[in-house]
Length: 339
Image 1: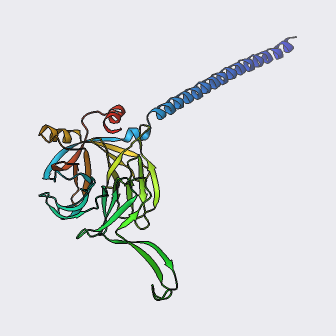
Image 2: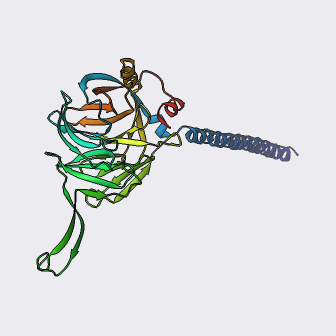
Image 3: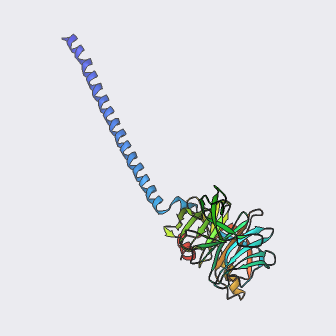
């Protein structure tokens, strides 16, 4: 019997050892599964929080910059000029478009003195608006119309533009087998709803019509090639007015505000805000009570100088920007800049 008993004992030990090992394996497996489930749940919760946060604060909002300014120089400015467009023409010269019926004009102005060197008065029925300089030509739009004008930059003479070309066999008119073109003196028609602001990057025109739209316009055909709806914090940035192209951005005055919006021409994103409230307030404090709103941005690309003025302002300012010391939240911008 002894040999049989000795044979059975090892079998019981192996069976007990297998049972313990199985239990330990099952326990470890349960712990692993439970830990994995907890980790998955945590990841889902974190992703949900990030998604919710992303919906509340977009990456664009987080990257928006706010700017204050310092005045570098002050220059005289014609206080009767209802400034609608402003362009730096080089050699301390500005080109300016002014508005109001029976008072509208395009003018060449000396920066240092504010003296109007050349002026081209517009017909009484036109209200001058935005102005930009592309190559040797000045382009101007007019309020409440889709009509614009083109001027030679040297003497501000209006130029002819081609409005239609057809291939015809009229040797007495155009020459045999030549393209016959119809010219219309000095004006063009654009596709914006209205004419407010103009700017250029040297290749295409950018336009505004008093809405929240920023247009890209072919300078040969004057057809809109692209448009962006400009928004900030989910709100339309309406009343985009005078425009300037500066270092790859469009800077836009917002009518009836002391703000300039810095906009990406690629996708219409608002990149930043320039707050110029104290410029107008300083003029009023100095007794200039007849002034109108901030309007007019010009940029000297060679010397990196920024110029701003306003309608009926007696001064034109060269300014330099600094990151704002004051903390602006979305509500502040909506109150200051959006109407």
